[in-house]
Image 1: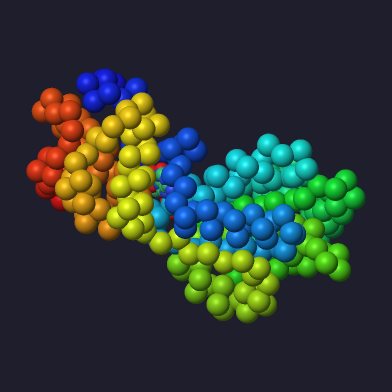
Image 2: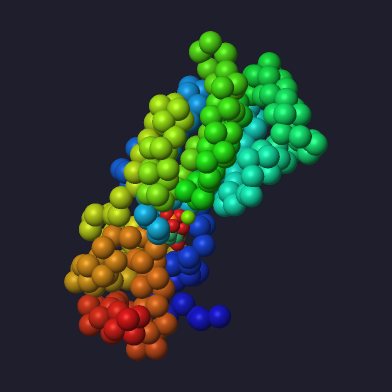
Length: 266
Ligand SMILES: Nc1ncnc2c1ncn2[C@@H]1O[C@H](COP(=O)(O)OP(=O)(O)O)[C@@H](O)[C@H]1O
Ligand SMILES: [Mg+2]
């Protein structure tokens, strides 16, 4: 393990795993979470969140999951990659996430799931299903989601579903008009502005144990220009900078050092 203490860091600030402690909440993240949360808590059924690769979708998905997983008045399930050969397999896997046993046919499985939803409703519990990488869903699986959303009272859905996916999901949904018309809230995550890029980097450095900035302003601008505000690219470049900074015994990272690392990444 690389000793980060010369930089005043207690742990690695730019890990690529989605540790919720390192989640920087910008205005855009607040708005996205608020919209999804509103739809979930008002039991409005379907929310969607779009965004390019590396923009922070899974980070948001896991944040939502973390919030509701621990609530006693929620049954919450999270499907990270819905790659199923059929809608029946998809349904079985959803049921398994809610601890329902597998049934022999799709019809029986649907009946069991409806029973579960009705019981949850009677027990004053909300049911939440979060599906990441939802652009991987195929036709009949979208149709299944529509069927699930049909379980409802006069005013509320019995299940809340958040679909999170790359922009391809937008195109797929467009073709599923019956489902698209049921979307209660939608958000698109955009790459960060420069100010948010700087704040996210400083935030992560601070969580990792260092109070003062690790980068000069010019270095931050270069990181922003290189990453164009994409959180994954920001993390990858910063991750690569750390060992070079330690090797060169610098206490603050300047622009030439960033440039050197960018050259090596090409
Ligand atoms: N709001 C954020 N705060 C801190 N780090 C973030 C944020 N959004 C994304 N990241 C980081 O960027 C990387 C990519 O994020 P991820 O959620 O996996 O993107 P996506 O699912 O859209 O491809 C991860 O390493 C994650 O830690
Ligand atoms: Mg992801």
